Every structure is written in C-alpha cells, then in structure tokens.
Length: 204
View 1 (cartoon, one colour):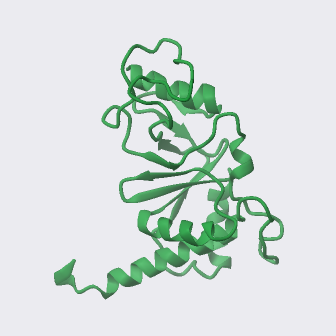
View 2 (cartoon, rainbow, N blue to C red):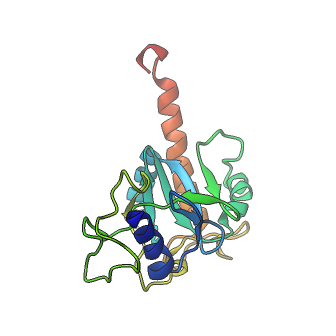
C-alpha cells in the first residue's frame, strides 16, 4: 500500500494529474492528455524518425509490447478522421487512442527509488518505508517521463490549424503536430504488418 500511496502522490501532487480510485493506480485520459497506443516496435521506429527532426516532445511509456504516447486532450476524437485524411483509414493498423472517459495504468513513477525518494524529493504524506517496485505497481515504465513543475500540455502533439485538413506543417521549436506524429506512426505500423504477413506461418 505504501507503493500505491507514493504512486498516487507523485501523479496527483507532483504532476497535477487525475487518478481513478482503486489498485493499481490508473490515470484518467481526456482531462490533460489522451494516449496513442501503438506496437512498441513501430513506436520506437517512429520516435527515431521524429527525434531526428523536431522530436515528439511529449511523455512516452512502454507497457509490454505496446508503447503509449501522450498527445493533446481531444486527439482520440480526431484520430479516425485524421487517419482518413492521411489515407490510412482503409488499412488495418494496430493503432488506437484512449480519450475522454478512459483510463490507463500508471507507469512506475520516475525518480522514486527503493527508498521512495530521489533527487531530493520529499516523502509523500502517509508513506511507510519501502519503495515502489514493478511487482507492486503495474508493468508500464516511462521511456520519456513527464517533468514535475512543467505543464505537460505544452509538450503534447496536437492538431494545429495549419496541420488540419486543408493545411500542413509543424510549429518550429515545439512538439510535432498530431498529423505528423500519426502519419509517422501509421507508416511504421503498416510496415510492421507487411513484414509479419511476409513471414511463413511455419515460422511464426
């Protein structure tokens, strides 16, 4: 229970993110961010491509063979139309978004070590000795963690006016627009699917 308290404290008090009651700790989507859920292999390839340019900017987590990319709140509602506009709508992509009313299991809080504190952070109120371990709190981990004290919205890919149907582009110096992120991720999801289809059944 100490690990759960630390986890909830880190997200609610340090980051100001909403969590849902219960165990394991889950984050509410659609409030401050939505989540793009993609195959980890496709996500890593997309991040390499994007990081060579403006970068994705927003926090990224890994959960098993899935990657969770935080995007601007409201993006989940835009995804179907955006995929159609990008001409990916007719293809079976292993890509989905979690938005308003959704929940995702909270990744292990970044910086909370075996003793429950790191980088001089205070111990959360009511926490006993003992840390947050992977076997206590979920299987997800942060690859690109959120930063306490920084408004997460500023770093999240969003559907900008110039990137909406009828325009194109990204704002220099900040996260790529949602259209670019989705197009890049969809491209690598499609490549992953084609590669899997080319493998003989006997070798799968």
